Length: 105
Image 1 (cartoon, one colour):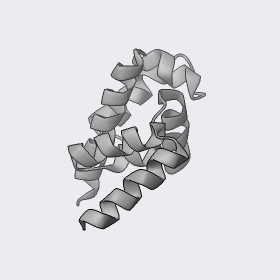
Image 2 (image 1 turned 30 degrees about the vertical axis):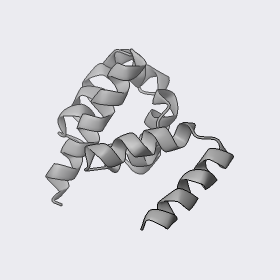
Image 3 (image 1 turned 45 degrees about the vertical axis):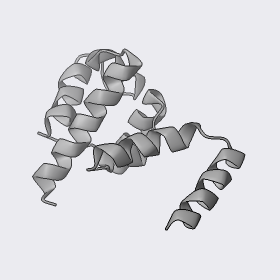
């Protein structure tokens, strides 16, 4: 995967998560600690792939948006959905899921 396609995946996932959270770009930027005057532009650049957030920023964005940070890096849409669902499972449900998965493979 090229750096540009990776940025596009991150940007697309970021936009999806932000919209699901109902946050405008400027508000999200301020919540992660960006200056209010540049917050919207910075988030827009992340979403369009012009710039890629470093991992520390990706962690902050994920925390605010309620998704695991790995969600931003999933190229496959089904895997991204699974990652989001995994985050919401209890430890018991995770163990059951893994047991069932191991049985089927």
